[in-house]
Amino acid sequence: MSNNLPSYLDISKDINSDLSNAIETLNPDKIAILVDENTKKYCLPHLHVSIDTLIEIQSGEQHKTLETCSHIWHQLTAIECSRKSLLINLGGGVIGDMGGFAASTYKRGMPFINIPTTLLSQVDASVGGKLGIDFEGLKNHIGVFQDPARVIINTEFLKTLPKRELKSGFAEIIKHALIRSTEQWEYLNRYSFEEINWDEIIPKSISIKNEVVQEDPLEGGIRKVLNYGHTVGHALESYFLNSKTPLLHGEAIAWGMILENEIAVIAGLLSKGESEVINGFIRSVYDINLELPAYELLRSHLLQDKKNDAQGIRFSLLEKIGACAHGVLVEETVLKDILK
Ligand code: GLY
Image 1 (cartoon, rainbow, N blue to C red):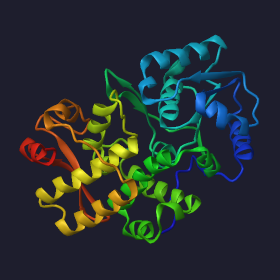
Image 2 (spheres, rainbow, N blue to C red):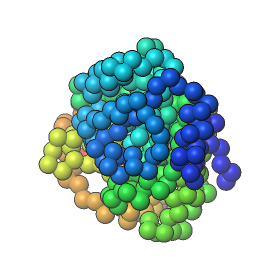
Image 3 (cartoon, protein in one colour):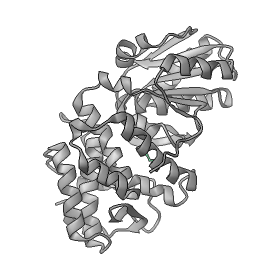
């Protein structure tokens, strides 16, 4: 499988050299860096770049809000950033999505560079230009599509992550294989999680996503396959967000994929045999037990999914390993049955 990476993305062996080249090309009048308390401590010391301001926000999905965005705009305004200034987003998906959104809307748009530091953000949020914030408890409810000036990925940052966080990102790698690439699926099945070579697998995974995004950048159709596992997954993630045991995004997606495979079997799209093989693989990686909430408790979250229309809840469901359908209408009776 040859790699098909976006033109704005570097798989970097030398973060400082690639960052300084990108800055030289952009030639900004001011530079701000956005971090959270984790990336300030573990990642920022690796960057040698002179900046005009450091903007710090609190980590976590619960801070991906309009209030935090206002704080970023306020800081950019305080040092008189212009449309020729640059915001460098150093962090995971929340930093990239929200920092990118803040930059894209500041004075109608200033350039930004994303340096994704988690596996999840390196393989998913790094490609496809989706930016935004959560609103009234709804994930990514307010946002825009806009590509960064540059994305610089360095797998050294993954060494700072706990295993649970790495496994969370791995769910998106599994998803990319399942929706489009039997070759990548076979690769995943050849190695245990501990044996995975990130430098090899990340570019392959990004290439699969990029191929889909190039076919349908604004998600009019085929890009919806990237939401496989996410309809149920997002509902579970939202439901557990304020519980004592919140799920990481990838953990929710892992469960979403398992449950959506069961839905695909009932819908007559996926064979029971293949569903069992896939679900067995996912369970072997995650070893997670989850007390599923009753359908009624997830219903309001499912109804808010961005892929829905007036006819009902629409899913992206596997047809087989390497092929995914989208826009599949699923009756609520089926959902009630699966989510018992
Ligand atoms: N994370 C799904 C997408 O970028 O479309």
